[in-house]
Length: 383
Figure (cartoon, rainbow, N blue to C red):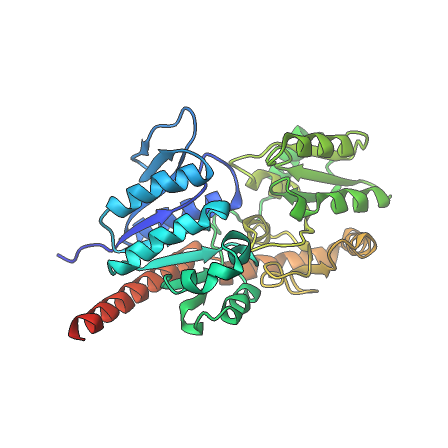
């Protein structure tokens, strides 16, 4: 009987903490198991959590930041597995993370590192350490093509960089019917005939919710509403306070806390808006496409891979309130264009972001890295 390939996923965040990375990691873990891989995840343990979620295959280790990395690194080095998958770099603790990766490489165990956004390596490691650290990684997975170019410019061989789009459950995130739309709208006290914009995601500075609010205030279109889901998912409490203050005087704005079931809110909306200045490849955007929502997004890496201007939505410059307001106005007033974009958006999600395809692509990278490690080990033995 052939033994299943053993994958250890090392992640700085995991459910029940909400976020795109957390959901993406969980979906990948579950899908890899369906494909026959033996998968365990190592993640931080918060107060009240058990040390092991056996039904999920998640080992939780106490600590935050560098403390978590130190403790979890000890655990990682004691385990028996075929490939390590780091779903992110641990910011200020990344050098310690790379120390573990080098130790594994010396033992012939390959590591895959997923880079979440542009500039992650230089922010986390520093230019003076990059050459040494990059050489210890078997393969890198990137979420947009600009990140691929960045790694190649840093000296990483093209064969070691793989673009794998984020995948989602395209059946769960499918276009809703009018009955569901009106039910959710009734709960939010939004009129049946309103045109609803939705932002879904974390309350973080790089998401530029401030630009969204400034744009929305400029629009005096009849029956236009804005739904912000996840306003409480902020690194600092003050960010929540500021957002609530910016929205409280406008009766057309609805604020909803982060939720494990964002689909219903996507079903209640007509247009998805994401005005970030920096992204990897946002899961919320892909979920919106899969639900058939046209998108107004900034023309940045990570969004342009998912949205073609004029096809799935409209692309605007970062921070440009006037251009964003114009794009919203055009889509609000043109229902036929919205319907056309909705159809194209759903087709793109099905074609490029199916969860099984993502898991199979990661499986290919794992097996290739394992093969490279064995070949390298055989070469050293012969010499």
